[in-house]
Length: 73
Image (cartoon, rainbow, N blue to C red; front, top):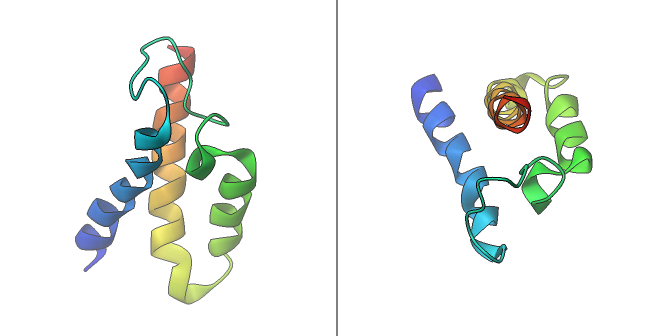
């Protein structure tokens, strides 16, 4: 079940489809796309406080960390 939740957390990238252009290698997705905004990241972090949302919140935060690494490397 945890594996499925981690896989489904990749759906957060659907917000890339509303960007123009959809892919830009020089663009940082953090705070550009709605589900990658600082506000959304704060909600993901708050999800760690609740047992029922902890796994999903952790998966989403790992996703944001991976996207942030893309910005700086």
